[in-house]
Image 1 (cartoon, rainbow, N blue to C red):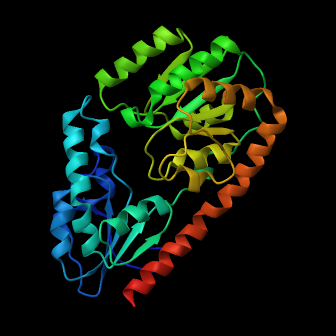
Image 2 (image 1 turned 135 degrees about the horizontal axis):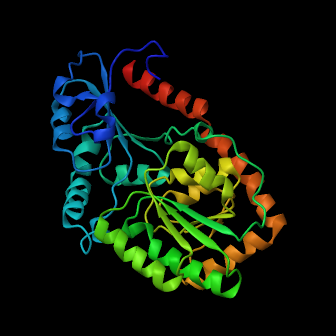
Length: 322
């Protein structure tokens, strides 16, 4: 994108994911001119990034939010430590930045509390259309399809979604199916969720990860509802994917979810799974409500249009560089 704007620069990372290694240069190879602007993305404990804070260049920090460590202590101590240290280091990064950017107002408030001199909100650059075109609303077929897309981690509350789905299936739709799409925190954590699924809704729950874009699009097109009961979200990209594919959304208003969802989702604060189950039945059985949510979702997408958000980012960077 920067290249298309006629800018130089490059993408550097300390420890990129193996699948992304070819897309990044080593951070140690960064050779920035004094007049350059460094855009630092912060989403986890990163000592190699901390070393960049002493450079003379102007810095724009983009915070993607770090999940509180308490969600991980009972499941993965290494992840818990990384989250704990990452959150404790946030003030250091926030104070070093000329502008600290949150991908949501929820994130920006955290940055202000951490001591940032100036904060701004620039959403995540998302292009749901890259996943493929939406299809017609799914028919009754062989039963309602409920979907959640997101990593299998404790704060996403797959356990609560399972309990809500099991109640919905028992009370309203015995042929309903639930799909979880996302990579697991660990094999052990995935196994715990699979065991719970087998106990609550045997044969009705599918766990998938590593799907191609085409396969993920197929899951979206088949879904009658998107159920997100996560208790910590800095932004929640799958909401926009649901809106693009016309899938009605039921979600907890956690973190950045309310501002991303706007009026295009049914937000449920009650943690009683029976409430989420009732809302599932409502969006699947009430065609008028489902249609209204689809229309609102499509309208909500305009606020996160790729070109619009890219323009906001460009304007901010040009101001910092001036």
